[in-house]
Image (cartoon, rainbow, N blue to C red; front, side):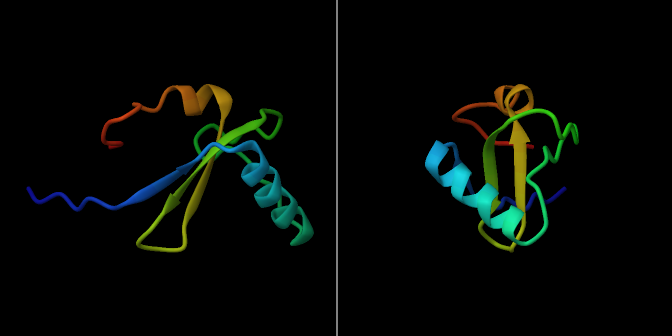
Length: 73
């Protein structure tokens, strides 16, 4: 079984997250957790897929469940 690894950037900086949230709101959207879809939770980080144009916003509880310093599967 072949595995395709993709490069991601993890954004945790509060000022960057605030800027991303403001940009989303200006386009009529809102950053909501990709994993649990709870719109009431505060977004704690964003995963940016470097090979494509996809981003995943994650709330605090879901962000803390990510393996740190490891591969994300």
